[in-house]
Length: 346
Image (cartoon, rainbow, N blue to C red):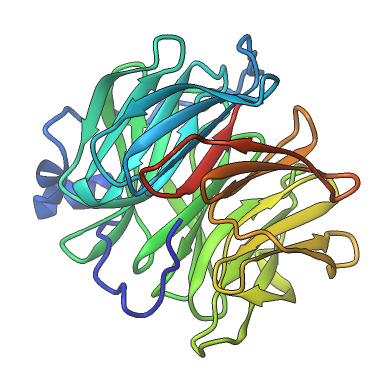
């Protein structure tokens, strides 16, 4: 993941509702696919029948599929362009690789390790997440200077929703029940809360400057927002939002260049790009409990094995959530640039 600062002002686009976009003629410019109405949300328990895999990628555009049990790369898929984001389907069979600067998403079948189709939009994209029912893929993006979240119906491969958010949306996260999206608006100093049932913004929460990425607690009660500092060599922070009230309830100092973050059971992990560390925060006390000397870019958490997964250059590192100890370092066998994003099944 890339650190987003005030120099990245020209990154996104949008309209408040799909009808407004149609009226403005923007939706046609986004995608040559048809637009379908948003359907009622039905969350079904995800059944992951695949082995545990980690997926890592970066500037080279190569997606590496890692068998976690074997601690080895099993396949490499060339997606053709710099990767800015990753998302995995709930069943672990499909990976959505965001080639953000080229305005496309490579859809990779894990079993065959092949790009089976591409989603193309006339926008610069950043991050992605799949709703827990597996029916929607959401992307943050910019076109015509407007920030939006795009929702794609994965059954019909069509654009299902275009939702206007704040300026320069970057990271996004989905609630455990799939009913809410939380979007960091980097240049807008805010977090947009989206109801996925009708694709509308229900709340905009003002936060400190330069929000980067967001993570939602496993119980859905709390959203965490990372912030880098405007000043060089100055610590970043994490904003804590109570999702019931929509109020900011705490600020937690972390390392320099705070970026990607992931929420586990009782720990929050924050990758600090500029000082080469990972801050570990106790979510109950909201205090920093340890600092790992790991130069991580991407970071995610797997409830399946209660571990944090980090993209650490040319390796993937797994940290036990209970002890905070590194339990595995996997060589990515890459000579084409470091991994910057990571996702995991389960």
